[in-house]
Image (cartoon, rainbow, N blue to C red; front, side, top):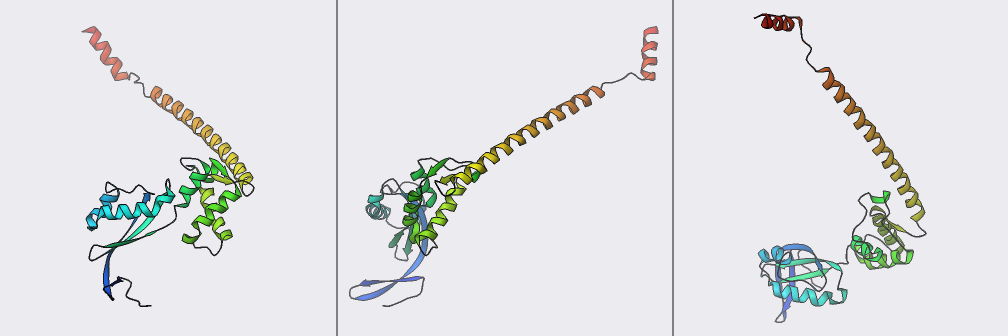
Length: 218
C-alpha cells in the first residue's frame, strides 16, 4: 500500500497514482437525504469551488436510509476542486432527544429531569456512537452517553433515575428558598427607599422662616 503526506491524496487514474493536494477540510451537520445547494450547505461549500449539485446528490444517496437524522459530515477538498466526504454518526444529544421524544434538554442540567429512557435504549445509542467515541467497548460507550444524558436532564431508568429525581427535588427546594430570600431582600430595599425619600423632605430653616415673615410684612 502506498502512502503520501497527510496534506496529499492519491487517486488511481489511467494506471498511475496521481497525487492531489488537500486544500481544505470542512465539517457540516446536515439532515440526512436533504442536502441542497441552498444555505447552509451552499454558504459554506460555495466559496470552496466544488460542484454543489454533485456533493448534494452523493450525500443524499449515502444518507437516504437515515432520513430524519442529523448527520455530521467531514468534506475533504482538493486543489483540483474535487472532493471526498466521510459520514459520522449523529450527535449523541440528537439521538438522546430522538429516543426520549423531547425537543430540547434541560436548561438546568441534572437539576431538572425532562425525560427518562431505558437501559436498552441507552445501549442502542452507545452501539450507534461507538465508532466515533473514545471507548473500547459498548459498556464504556454507555458510560459516556449516560454522562451526556445526565447533563441534558435525561435519566436512565434503573441506573440513575432515582438519584436524579432526588437531586432535582433538592434543586427545586433550593430554588424556592432562593426566590423567597430575593423577595425578602426586595421588600427591605423598598422599605429603605421609602424611608430615604421620607427623610429627604425639606424642613424650613430659621432663615427661611425670617424671609417668609419679611415677605408677609411687605
